[in-house]
Length: 138
Image (cartoon, rainbow, N blue to C red):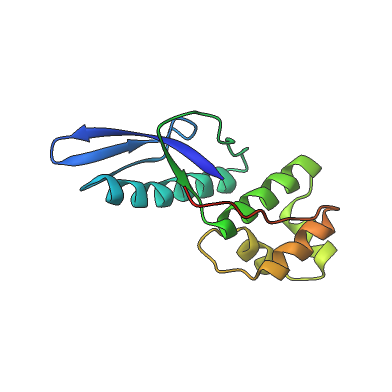
């Protein structure tokens, strides 16, 4: 999951804007710092969408610079999206998995280091499966 970003020189800093997620704004002291902070800004904005029970914008914009979210975050975002598409709330998923609601909350928390097998079980409870693709680094 890669989002295009726009980098702009702003005094002594570099500001970062994410066209697909207008709420994700940040800055850095240099290009590398700005890009590192952008991933956190994107995740924070996405957590806001999740808390508000809104759809998460898919990465569509094109650009010269991109920020890739960590694989675990991408899996959690896809799980949330699959739940919304299937009309399955957190309580319903907890019942399907036979777990307490706080466990589903942690599965969707981008800051929690969930286990991949737990995420796979959640997808299976939705009639979905996940696959992993490996590509050369950019």
